[in-house]
Length: 394
Ligand SMILES: Cc1cc2nc3c(=O)[nH]c(=O)nc-3n(C[C@H](O)[C@H](O)[C@H](O)COP(=O)(O)OP(=O)(O)OC[C@H]3O[C@@H](n4cnc5c(N)ncnc54)[C@H](O)[C@@H]3O)c2cc1C
Image 1 (tube, protein in one colour):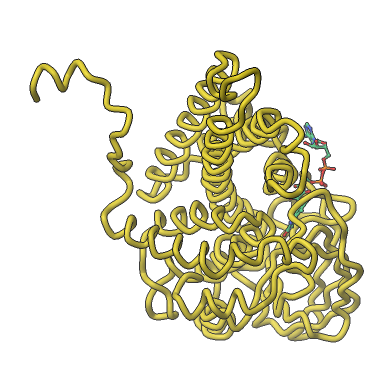
Image 2 (cartoon, helix red, strand yellow):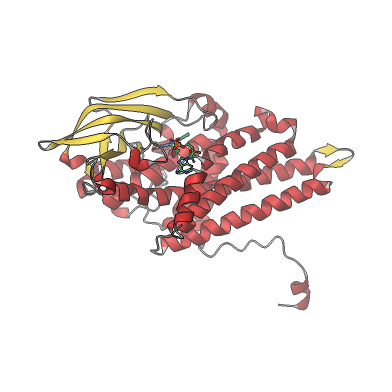
């Protein structure tokens, strides 16, 4: 390297992170082009109507619903980083509810079927899910138990060679459209953490009731359901994994969900940052662009630093996860930090937009509303802090 190169800062250097290869970058480009061409144009409409089911079928056709799933079940056989790429590129649809609905399917409900399912369950649920022909949802939260997963009350009781399920689940993403639910139940209330069991339950069974669509602050393009289960009978073959091991299974599922959430939050923060940068360079006040005020420059510097820190934490943790470690502490840190950071960035970007930030037309208020969920869903900030704190035996 010549001395002149050493002395000149290279702000435009675009060396990719070491976890990604050329193939990942090609995948990124093709997902971006699909998302921008086929999804983003509908973002405003889907805020009103929720996104249509054809999105799953189209993404299935394109192979996007099983990027990290084995080829024998119709997946692409890619590594874990392919899922990160999808989560990052979905933000370019500018439709948080859509990204969430798809992520619930690809990274929350279907991975437990691959990890714990029987061959029969993989053929019956995983394969059509990867093709986008069956839509999934995940049922953990209940009206009386969210953060406290062990406090759930939904019961599954064995009756001959069947199980009878009673209870309710709330805030269930995709709950109205789903063909099946990966359901967390209690099978032995006296057995502590060994008393939980996962089931795969068809949503058209007698006794599965989809109650009202819940109205919410953001993520309007997604459907969020309150569900009731009244004497729902399922065969033994509906047990997912081992009876009594459901709590550990769902805790494992949550790690993938949190890491994907962190990646999505970083990407969303970067996207709103980029849009706001352009705005600040164009918008004039007191005879100069907003970007030429030192206070604005420092806001961008602060945001860029936080985005980069969250990105590095997320990627490094993903690298450990993908290489066989189970870094629950760092996953919790990534989820916590990326979620908080994304909310702060969205808020600062709204501020930089002034009144325009408050107007629907610019889409910034939507990002601000949608991102607020990240600090609640998949484990709240407080729960992440508790997991991190307890990891030090505190
Ligand atoms: C739009 C949306 C979509 C969702 N999608 C799904 C889904 O698809 N499937 C699903 O199962 N769930 C879903 N959820 C539920 C989500 O995971 C829960 O809302 C979340 O885990 C928090 O649970 P809760 O709402 O019951 O809050 P609570 O557990 O009642 O918590 C309330 C407050 O108390 C705090 N708190 C609780 N316990 C502690 C503690 N020990 N120490 C300190 N503070 C504590 C929390 O951090 C929070 O601030 C969704 C939620 C929303 C809003």
